[in-house]
Amino acid sequence: MAWDKEEPRAITLARLKVVAPELACDEFQAYNQHYHGDKLIGLGDTFEELESALQARDHPLIDLALARYGASDAVVGALYNKALAGTGDAQQDKGVRIAVLSNRTLPRMLFGDEPCVPKEELRRLAQSGDKEELQVMLRNPSSGGLLRDLYQHKPPFDDLPMDRLQVLVNASIPNARVNIDESNGDGPDMLHWDIQEGIWHMLATAPLEKKWMWTLDFLLFQLNPAHVYAPDRDVQEVLARWATLVVKKTFGNQDEDEEGFHANAGLTAVDEFRCLIAALYGQVWKDGKSHIVGSKDDQDMALRCAYYGNASMKPEEMQACHDRDGDAFVYAALCNDNLFHDRKCRALLEGMISGQLRYRYAARCEQIAKRWKSFDSKPVSESGAAVLDDIIEERPPSAESQALSRLETKVTELASKLNGVKSTAAWIVIGIVALLVWKQ
Image 1 (cartoon, rainbow, N blue to C red):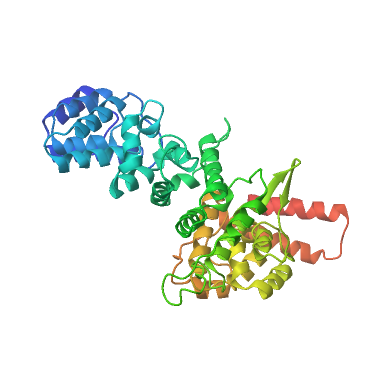
Image 2 (image 1 turned 90 degrees about the horizontal axis):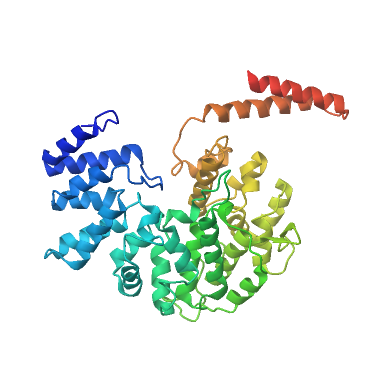
């Protein structure tokens, strides 16, 4: 039965007390998915009575559903503590604990100042939790507070050996919270800011070791460049720090440097990692202005990548940079939103992508499309369509996207007809006609 907000609560309670546990579980899950999905919000105590009634049935299947989808911190917390103390069924107890750790309805109650999961239990998980527990806990988008504390090396992660810390950071990599910015008119999302600050903190302080480099490399690779905050310190210090690391091949000729993984650019793994850092963090805020750290003519490729990943460029400049650095240019340029919003630059970029960078390009298009409704994630060039046809799903552009495309075409045509006319009045005419086209 589908949930109905108009059903009197007394009927809902009476029904859920007697229906088969499987049906009660299905209905509770359906309610959660219908009204909340994956939104990171809490329900307060609105359904405290309903969840308490379900908990009173003391059935394993219902307990699992409550642990996974419950909105009552009292009910969910009691279930976790009960499972932690042990009921005699170790498999059921771990299932309930895992379900609680994966609960997305209680973003603040799970891991906040007064968490459903006791702080001493969080410390135990940090110190000795198994792989399954760590992955569920650290990949839950509701665990943003834990990500912040992990990346900034704060309790319950402050006294961990660096090897254990690396294991936890590695487990957290797929967490979508690193790319969720809940800033709005009421203010910035400070938790998102703290998470991004924590990532930068690790780049500046993590041990110069192969396993740390690969962990941070794949973490950075997951980031949406639009959500990366410009650091207030010198990026060149971090780039110089990682330049001292030497990573040799694990297999084959172990005297040779490990090759990069993401781009077929002939770079070592360390150089590719430095290029990614530079492309993401190469634009800094200094003296009240935004500055790009490197330049296209810098001797250090990483600093050239800082430019490629942040500067506004014209197609001719892009081509010259690609002629010099090949896939290294493309790898860095894929972090540059400016190039995606310029149709000519984007078309040229599509002609440069190959290999695994095709997937990177497709992922970046999806990221930008989520932020800008007018952005069409499909290729804009024939070469792009040819190399991306097996990884980009064909779908019709939105009505807004089509309207913007028509507007762009009309403005271009009008500008062409008035070629050479520089007077202010002529351009005012173009603006008025464009506005009329937009309203059609």
